Image (tube, rainbow, N blue to C red; front, side, top):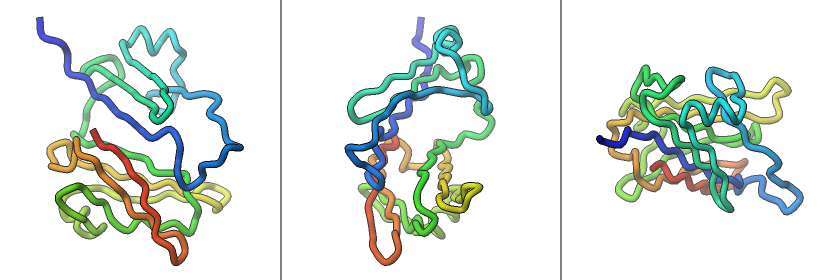
Length: 155
């Protein structure tokens, strides 16, 4: 019997833009459709949520309860970041894509401000068929007049 396909997402545990020894990760939860799942429900769905020193790792079997792939898109949330942070480009080992290049290739890139206006979250959706999926991807963020690099492993 063939093993089911599993969607695996590794997200950096520490945001390098806000890292400080004063922050401590207290809890990590998983949710579906905006609803937090209890540990028993995560287990019953055969989902996996683990945390190591560098990453939060989520594994979801394709076809498991709550895993309907409506659009074949790989979705990444970046943030929260300061209101003055601008996403400039997305780079892989083989290319650097401006936001205009990303949109032309079918990526969806948008930001949403927090209700208090102090921070925002970027959402980047990439078609699963795009060649950057599965590669080491870096994001260039402009903070005021400075350039900062945030590395995201999109495998």
